[in-house]
Length: 174
Image (tube, rainbow, N blue to C red; front, side, top):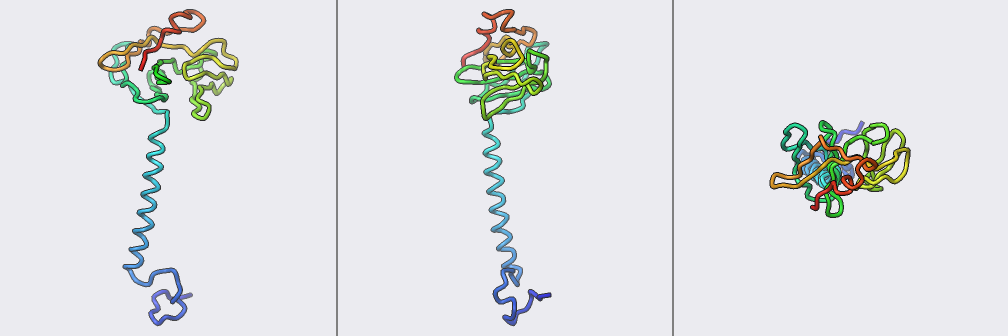
């Protein structure tokens, strides 16, 4: 075994390990700084993801108030089973479940689509049906904007095939 504390310039002269504490600490600081910078960059990238899990700011019966989303993206309130989407200048509120068999929908960021993991029905960010076993778009909730934020009425569920006009109008401009 090589003794790394040799000071006579023997086998350790070209050894990459530092023989003193200052050298070791200097190298450790460089490595730690690089690691923290990498973590910071990863955290910044994660903060820019277009999906977030949120909770209502206020709940009165079936009326929920959410902060107005600052940018295009998907906000999911699992407890209330609400998906709040801001997309191309409009905000929509959807039921979390697929209208086909009530399985929780998932957002696919790469394709900018919602997808049902059970039967693979797909929907646009505005809730319009694209393909799969479902027969209509995602169910929308009545929605309005006021001084406190985005107000979602979960007692007023609009199904595209039952109330096409109400379904088309269930959004607010952002």
